[in-house]
Image (cartoon, rainbow, N blue to C red; front, side, top):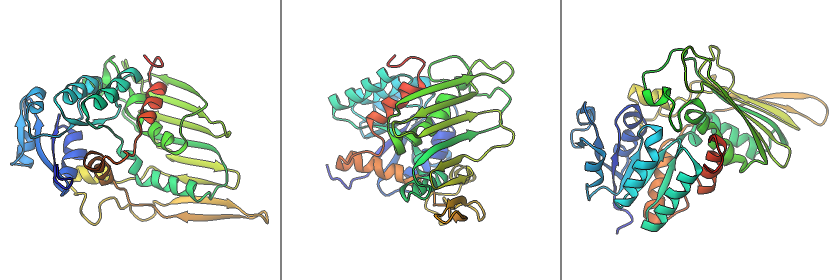
Length: 343
């Protein structure tokens, strides 16, 4: 097959995820063709994209012989079953976080992909958040010396029980630790690899909540680095999303990535302003010099680049290039997120 041929793609749902995080990146991209979507009731995708086929069921979409890639963006506890079906139908899959509820299921999907010769790709767009890219830059340049302590968090204030049943009922991969914690855990693992040890705390604090709405994961590394991952739905005053301390200084950055908000407003990935943070949202670096003085420096925000996810997807499928999220990283992530390791 011609490696430059567009990848015809189907999306399994057209809620916020399909509408905001996937469809625009397929439509505004010469490497992909947004061919079809599953919409069981409302046919909103055809209103936005008249040429797109709207199937009534997942099986109908999977039986479309022209579709090469299926984006699995359904409720968390369905990821494994739908991804498995798609692979068995001969499709490559791009699976939203959490990749699967357990490490055993993740390993089964990767093995199934190898059996059928299909790419099984995790979707972790927040490696391309502007604030995370700033942290990555500071670490690569060793501006704070040897890192000792990193606090990375995702704060929201949603005291009410949300309308999405799959997020608010007891089922595999439910709760904020799987939902938002997976983003942060993926970022950390991409920077530092597998930790030496970990401690996990979670709890339910909203009225009538039956799933965790607070979580804290502490990771310890062999070189002495300690990472504190926190996510909560009950933070009325969001704190800095990144606080890094090292032997030579500190770096502090708010959660300021604008891509999600821009996409919701209808700003397209190819527009000039996409991914650009507003002025005054830069990170603050404090450096200790050899003469004992301290200097504070502004670290300009990087532009966010969710579109790079799809470049990696294309390169993996068409050119067999190594993917930016490794199988090991997914296994480590689910070992930490899951209630029982290897379950």
